[in-house]
Length: 233
Image 1 (cartoon, rainbow, N blue to C red):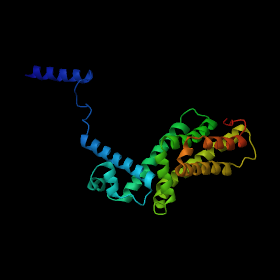
Image 2 (image 1 turned 30 degrees about the vertical axis):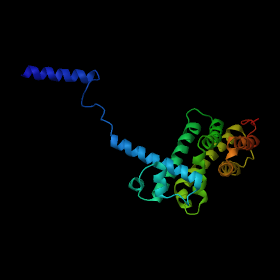
Image 3 (image 1 turned 180 degrees about the vertical axis):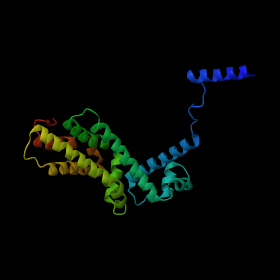
Image 4 (image 1 turned 90 degrees about the vertical axis):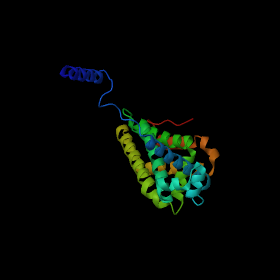
């Protein structure tokens, strides 16, 4: 009896060592949770489409449910209220922009000028790849009722990006030996260009495929730091 127990224990240890079944095996996936998360994402995607196409005034929980192909009760179950849903939408979009910013601006090993160029690329790439997302940003920041939500979720990130870009410009100016550069005006001007371009793209979608935003931002950077930035032809 003792020998059989010892043998069983030995086999169990060997299986664990060789990657076989053991107590530390990966837990099974929670299918119910996965379905819930997928349902939430479909609702967020549908809300983005409706807001981008029609604005906020006509967007109701019932219309969102119809757009998703689900019941109004399911939308209410996940978000409780339209305001909560709008907050989730804006947070989702803010997170996606932040992910792109981290990839292009904060990647290890980049020089300050490369990071500044990454910031330029981030603004244009986001608008080109996700025009509906940009439209929703514009709608939230332009509508009086939703502006409070934007001020709570979107504005702090926008201010942080501007501040980060300002620090990059300071470093370029210092390391490059430039003098007389108005860093505050330059960083704010670049910020104005991005938001103005996004607003114009929302009003005039045909302008999204041009390089005007990138050309103009590089023009400002070249004027301030001619040895570090070349004009776009």
